[in-house]
Length: 425
Image: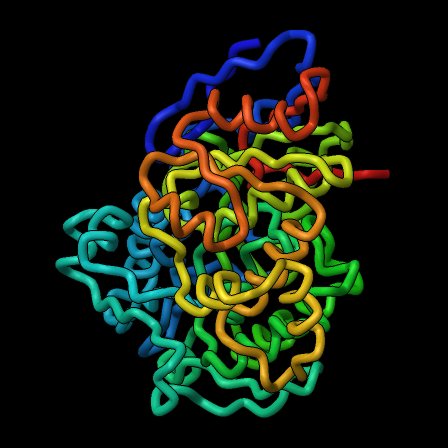
């Protein structure tokens, strides 16, 4: 069996013996695609807002507004969405003062080059763009307490404006259920203190804090409350395919439009588990496979499909390294993944440390499976220090997986682990 899977900015050719190959798990974007060009899909969503007045009605009479926009780690096609938003806003209110606020959450700052790649030269040169810094306590507004008990502190720029809206995209998310909607607020423009309280070990361990689940998800509950307190008035969220092209768009009320978009993604992405000894997965290529931190997302799809004691082959460039110093150091310094899991479980909510949630999920996976990282762009030593194995090529990884599980081991491929919701029942 020959397949092409995403790796960095290319498609990697892989081969799996027919006698071992058990199938492919992938989403069905073609069966869900809305009609029209990317621009037409977005315009139609804005023409038909869900549970809300139109964007044009909302901006009338306002002196200022903030558009929250995703950062460099998210493949939101802002070169498509942002020009449309800006045009429609200014046609309705030419004098309005617009600030684009980059929702970095707990990530590093987005660079000028990454902004240009995201929006194009014109928008970066002409618009007021501010990159959120979760560690800038002086720049935060105190909005009280989250339902979970954590402090709710959000970027003051978003709170002090006349109108707050957000653009983003919806995909399955490995502990928030789905991305998009309320996630633009928390973690998007929240303080580090708020992010860490929301991402506490208790919540991450919840069986409801999983891919494709919103109901009873404690992380989602906090995020929804944060969006309400921030007065997030309107969203434009898109759904994209493997080529990062818009295939669906949802605009309107921050909760209702988001839920409608999530239902669209669920229909497109839900697949039935096909338990295997070896599962091959990716993070969908660039930009999500830039580091090990983000690659944990793709691993969770494999986790849901891999037999206990099996092997996960994670094909991910990780050219930007580990993606989080605390994430890396805690895994490196742990005697074993299970020992790290046990230590994290004892950390109180308000003492959550940076990147704890990511190391907790990776440790959970490593405690059950062998993970082989396939990359020729990242330090093999770093990967090994984090309790994983390294392979420079896919063939090398597959050979090693057969050594572990035997030559008769079954193999399933998930070409894009971020784009599927694997259901075990």
